[in-house]
Length: 211
Ligand SMILES: [Fe+2]
Image (cartoon, rainbow, N blue to C red; front, side):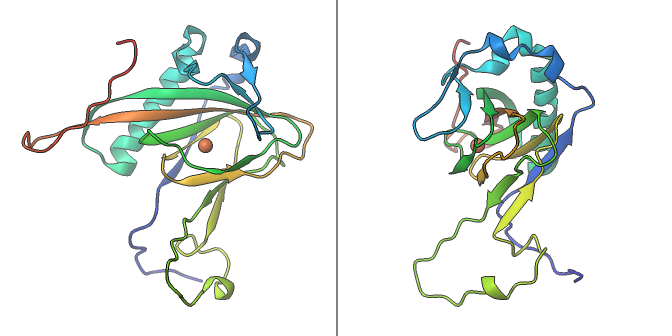
């Protein structure tokens, strides 16, 4: 199947960044404390601990920041003054660990850097949001496979030393880890202060805590 039409109003942009530096061996995961949240099957660093601000993660934070800037500049093409990591956390998914479908509130862009993963770990699935308030004729059952413009779900691999960056409103999750090996990701949210040429418009400013 060859597509020559232009997909209009696609729901989002996901970009994979491959990191030339394997950070996993330089990070002491045991220096952080973890919690298991109600209804969750994974370990996660404590809420409100912004791990990327930890001095021990300075190198990975710098790399992530560079890629986030590329995403804002070249993928979204935003006019902005600055951005910062408003939240960041580490997820450790042992065998059986999964992530139900969710999106990230109070955030503009998000990402997940895969510190550790193996072949066979579940990919990150992005889901199209259905908005059906009226009767409609479904094409879902009649679609050929493999068309990203019409797919209801797109999966991106959780390759070790790579990072997926995406708009925070996109719904995503992953199936259970069926392997013995841990699937470990470092996720983050970032807020963006937009550039505003017209001073007559209202202005939203985000301020980083502690600054
Ligand atoms: Fe998420």
